[in-house]
Length: 129
Image 1 (cartoon, rainbow, N blue to C red):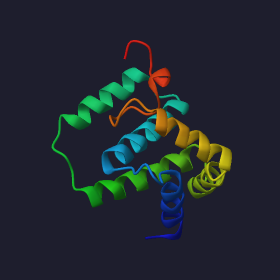
Image 2 (spheres, one colour):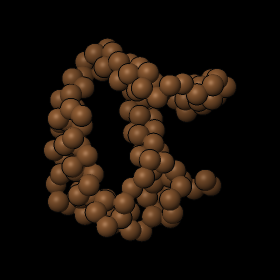
Image 3 (spheres, rainbow, N blue to C red):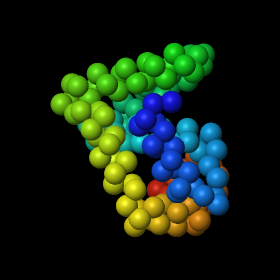
């Protein structure tokens, strides 16, 4: 495991102490963050729904190959939009180590609506969802 990955896991272990996370939750949080990134770059919901339908119309891939493809594609996208992917990751990891951020996340986890794919609490949910 590389250093950045290990440091991210260390942070997560601190945040989730006493309230363990699991693979389905990590998958949902990754999908949420990836979706927020492409939204911030201008992808529309309609385009996202088209991609989602396309992906789920095909058989599931091999996790190691798909992880490599995801990482390679993220690096190329970051290059195209003039972002240093690792610097962005380091900045975000530094931000979330702030004790106030850790407490905010722990509070949301304690008040969450359940263990489903949506984050946060009932008040955070989109109306009509």
